[in-house]
Image 1 (cartoon, rainbow, N blue to C red):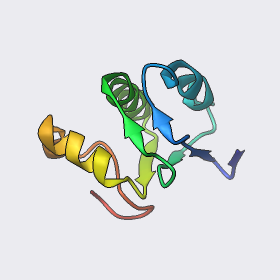
Image 2 (cartoon, helix red, strand yellow):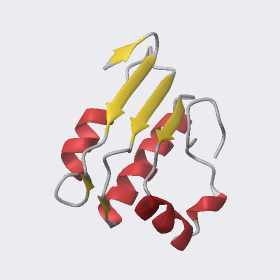
Image 3 (cartoon, rainbow, N blue to C red):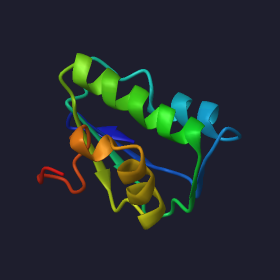
Length: 101
């Protein structure tokens, strides 16, 4: 759903090799009028390497197009993966709308 320059996407319960392509198609490409992408991760329960790659791709696309990207309610599993891969030093997502990670 997109309105007022904001695109809101509720991620599925899995962000894995089996679902990454479908989720990518929901998120990208970003329209020229999009100024903010909000990814609701509240339902997310399973993440694998393909899911992390997709999040990095989305973050890169947002950065290149000067679009703010917010990952809302990331689950512990995602926080743990980000910490394990030392991606927490790269603040490419905000954990809440309006707050830096």
